[in-house]
Length: 362
Length: 107
Image (tube, rainbow over all chains, first blue to last red; front, side, top):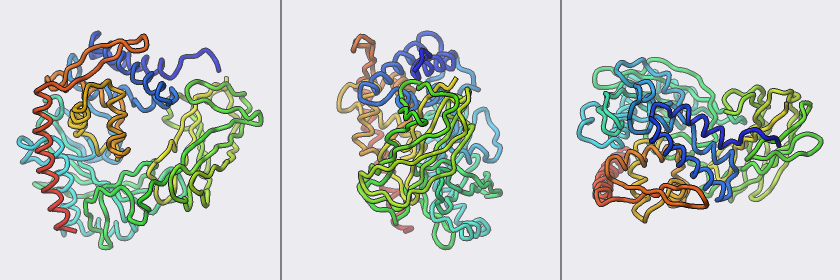
């Protein structure tokens, strides 16, 4: 360990900077609340880095706060669903891609949540319409059985967004392809833009995204048609909770256990890790993967190195398994290690299946 | 459930969670996760914007208290918040009934 700042201090420092547009009093209040939130989580048994990670990005917190001395630029919400961020260009003072959208005609009379769901339904109707036969053929060819349907839209200047008038601008269908033994699962995004009172699908993008958590909200049938189901997992998955969790990560021949709440000092030459994984669910896992990533900065954005996924063929409930990884020597630039595990076919994330460990190898 | 799917529902969820009594931010998030059987996993930072919005709209009120040597903000439902929650609950049930009928009909 060293004397550098804790994860909480780093978060508060980032937030202090990001929340500057809020003004002094409101900013101090948010900071004090977030500090209490993280400390409460630590008191409840979480380690600090995990508690901080759960708070999320400061800019997302800022985006949701009531507008006061805020610029329009600051009001644009970050888009976790990457495929929607690439949707058709839209006009209007603000762009909101929220993974679900709104219908134009009912925007002024329905609540925000209802508008989102109805717009998603309209996107599905467009997909199932005769004009989209080409895209359904793509779904058939790719063998997709699940999909995520999202809608992007623009808002006027009203704030909060729940009171703003909405206008649909685009939608997208993210076809989930067959699962592979990797923490990054393949999918095809098909984008649509507004055409009269419906949507017109017009282009695709193949993507790989981290998919330990389920993000499907529609079924794709044998003809390629979509049905909104909100079922997060394919029907072959057991009803019981299923998933694998990271128990610990041990570095190098010195067998130094990485801490999650504070930086662990490691030698520059360390080039091996052992990850302990446990079946945290109630049924045997028939195939899981494990991977390790090294990051040059504390925000876990782009790894400097990523292992090939290791496949675990079978893991009984409660069983613990050790998976070794050989990495490049850490050098003096590695700041974070991430260990990930996921059941290949079904995963309901019953335990921590992606853990971050701050390290200092300088 | 993916946090994205929860967007737009957070204010209602927060109001519902406060119906059982005053709570601070962390207790509220933990309560939501527990009461929903782990289905609702919020990005925890998103609960604060929601709390601030609801307070600005007069649906909840808050006060500082001392806890373990630090200040903690406690939130509580107002009378207007109870009424708003009732309205939202009725809207939701109506919507869910319509959507269920639609999905069952198309299935």
